[in-house]
Amino acid sequence: MKGKNLESLKSKKQLDFLFKHGKNLYSSVLKFIFLPNKSKIMRFVIVIAKKKYKSAVVRNKIRRQIKNILISSPKTGYDVAVLVNENYFDNSFDETAKIIKKNLAKI
Image 1 (cartoon, rainbow, N blue to C red):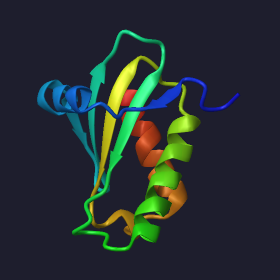
Image 2: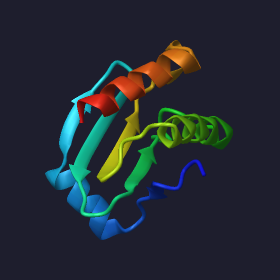
Image 3: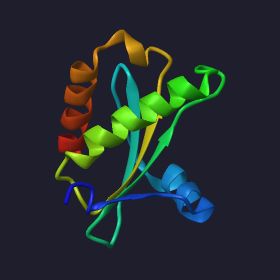
């Protein structure tokens, strides 16, 4: 079953810890903050600023696309925050998928 090793990161305490102690990876479209966790699943959060993308429809589309890419990645055992830049739609979905998979491979 796809997505079995994927879980949303929701706790404010865990998010604060991730943003404070996590390591950063940058790309032209996204910023990744990651930290190893003790479980066998990848916990993630996708952060999209309302200031940059005012429409909820657009923000949800970006979340769905990134989540679909994360589901197909085999990386487990990390907490990952994905921060979206304002130039997200400059690339096609396939190019964005390559960027995400390339950065996940670096972790």
